[in-house]
Each structure stands twice: as C-alpha cells, then as structure tokens.
Image (cartoon, rainbow, N blue to C red):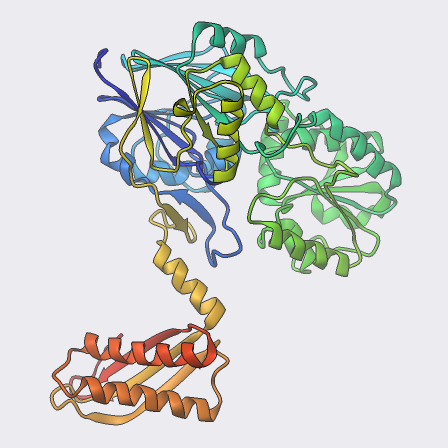
Length: 560
C-alpha cells in the first residue's frame, strides 16, 4: 500500500442491533475483520437458529482478506466463525487465549475439518498486516476473561475499537489497562469505535463483585434445589456461583451442552476453579437431597431449545422442576427476548418453582457493558477526533453520540451509522463513503446459505394467518374447467362449509374472467390469488397465504 491508500471502515453487523458484530477495515490491498458474531433469533423468526451477516461484500473482496481479529469469546463475537470460514478463506484468526479455545471447540462441534490457523495474542502482542495495518491490543474488563480492545494503526491514522467493556475497578479477573488507554489518548486517536449497549443507563455499571452478596443471600435462604441460569460464556458469574456452592457444600451439576463445553474449557485454563469432588453428572442429582444441590444451566433468555426451557416444559431427560425449587435468571433480557422470558417464568412458577430475576431490589446480575459515566470516561481518556458508536440498537447509538457531543465533540465528527454504511479515513480526516450490502441472513439448521427475508415472511404468514389452497383442473388446450374448483385450508379459521362454497365461487369467477382472453398459467394463478386474497382480507381482516394450484388435465402436469 502506501500513504495514498484510504482506509474504509464499515460494519456488516453490530449497528442498530445487539449481536452479529462484524467490523471491517479495508485498504486498497488489504482487509481485516474484527469479530464474527451471531445474533439469536427473536420470537418473530420461526424456524431460525441464528442470524448472521450477509458476507457478499467480503466474498467480493476475498483476495484482500488477510486476518480475522477476535475481541473476546462471547457468541455475538465468535458465533458466526463457522459460517464465515465456509463462505471465504480466512488466512489466520487472531484471538485471546480463552476465545481461541472456544473457537477451536466450536469448529470441532460444526465438523469443520479445514486446517484453520488460530494464533493467540495478549496485551503485549503487535501484529503487522502487510504495510497496511499494525494491530495491537488493550485489556478491558467484561463479563468474560480475556477481553480486549483493538488498536489499528494505519498510514492514514489511528483507530481504536474498544470491544465490549465496562470500567470495573474491582473485577473478578485481571484489571483493565486504563493507563494504556490514557496513553493512547495522549498520543492521539483519529477514530474511536465504542460499545453503546448501556448508553441509556445513567451512572456506572455495578462491578461483577457486587453480585456476590446477592448470590450468598440466595444460598443462605434456599432450602431446596438452587437452579441458576446464566449465559454459558459468563465465566465470571459461573466462577462466583461455584465458589459459594463449594463453601455451602452443595454439589454442582452442569446442564446444557454449551455450558458444559465452556466450563470444561475454562477449568482447563484455570479461569474457573471447581474441585472435582464438587461436580457431579446431572444423571446423579437424584442421589442427593435438594439442599445439597446447585444446578447451573443455560436458557436465561427463554430460548426454546435451551436446558431451562426443556425443564420448564417437562421435556428434559434428567431434570424435572420440583415444588420448592428456586430458579434464578442471572442475566438481563436481550432486546426482543422479553416475551420468551415471561413465558419461561410462567411455566416455571406453574411447576412450583420460586423464580428470581434481576431487579433494582435484588441484583443477581451485573451487566458487562458501560453505562453513561463509563462512556464519558472512555471519551475523556481517548479524546478522539472522530467518533462512531457501535454495538447497540439505533437509540443506543444515538444517545452515545449525544454523550460525545455533550463533552464538546463537534456534531459533524460523530457518525451514527447503520450496517453497510462506511467511513473513509485519509490523512487523519474522515468522510462518509459508499453503502455496501449488509442484509441479515437467517440460518435454518447448519446450511451456510441460510434463508432470505421472503422465506421468513412466508413462515410468519403461515404461523399467523394460515394457508388457503385453490385447486383448479384445467384443459390447457381448450381453456375449459375439467373439474369444479376445490379449496383446502390449513390454520385458517374461515372454513365453514358455507365459507368454502363462497371461496370457490370467488375463485371460479376470477378464473372465468381471466380465461376470456388467452392467459398463461402465471396470469391465471395471479388472478385467482388476487381475487381470493382481496375477498378474505375484506371479510376477515386476515391475510392467509393463498396458493393457486393449476393442474393441466391434458399433459398430466402440476404447476405450483
């Protein structure tokens, strides 16, 4: 490259949403990616397992892609790696020690056998990518160990990506390198990209250690089984619960595949310390009194396939919710998951459990993200020339931008962006660049191609309004109707005998009208669909999927 190549900065995921974080930095010759995350589906995405970015832009620039850098090991930052590396060749993945282990486990789980080069970094590492990028790291505190911000030095200027962080002065793990951040501010940062998840919340995010007192109270007051659900990757929380469980002489059962994998890896690296004698297989829980058990499980977001939901529905093979159980949801609701969580809580209570969620009265969860005072402090430490809020829904990004403006930053130097929007850094100046394709791809099973928005729309219509099929037997040569029009409905309430007769008449009139002139099968289907859909919507205010099926009685073909 040289001093004449501008640097393009854009996100394929992570802006105007919480999840699928994927940030790209591109010169004329090189492209590096920071994070490759998934977003978990909301209730309105039937049949979807994960949501990932559309990687078309990266595939079109595949010859430039030099490396993927990972800030930390949460799913919204590493969960899409199996899909990304099946879409294009990634020469090397740079990740902190714990994240590297989680990525290797994820690739094995997905049966990806390609020889993926994974290189561990720490806060002293410096990685040079051609002559385009020099990448270094700053340790931050978060709800998982080994979390880092990423410093990207280019001939055009310096960029700092904070990663997920909170300024925790009494962390469970290692300290945040505040002195290093301050030094970066003194040296000069052209563009800051900073976590916006808690931008609506005034004050400071409580320290992870503030949760320990609530956990102790739970163990003091609970005489039955204690079932605690949190994110499987919230290693700091799991360690705190484990310490107290050992102290209170409760055996610990780990439930949920992702929880089992993460705990196994974290124990191997020393991030979670639980004596072997304190862990029991979940199949052995019936050998112990309720007061002797602590069950750690996944599912605090109400995910239908997670361990806690299976317990609540009576579908788990080893654990059934019992009268007298105390279930603790030690997490905050991810935006969009409120309905799922409420449903889960009601199911648990119906089965006799006492359910405790995080509240201002009883803090069983501390966020891993910065509140307003920490955002102000980060902006004061770094003093960037330009600012791009990241990692948050639109309102969070906008508030974060307003915080920067309140601290004296020029409004024209603050960029509240959407996925696909780009900035161009050249000679320490930022301008807005072109927009790139950055749609969401919905993963159904493990198909890397996913399904598009039209498929999701069709599924939603079928779920909400049902289906009406119109069968027409037609002689394609003469245009004559061979058999009467037939109607079948599924999941649609408008289906009495009289209603079906009327729908047949509506379809037949539309058919007769369109057959007055020579018409193709496509034109016949469109006429029937429009007539039946309009009639149903007018009479019922519902919009079921209407599928005309034309059967050619001469050629014995079926056209759908």
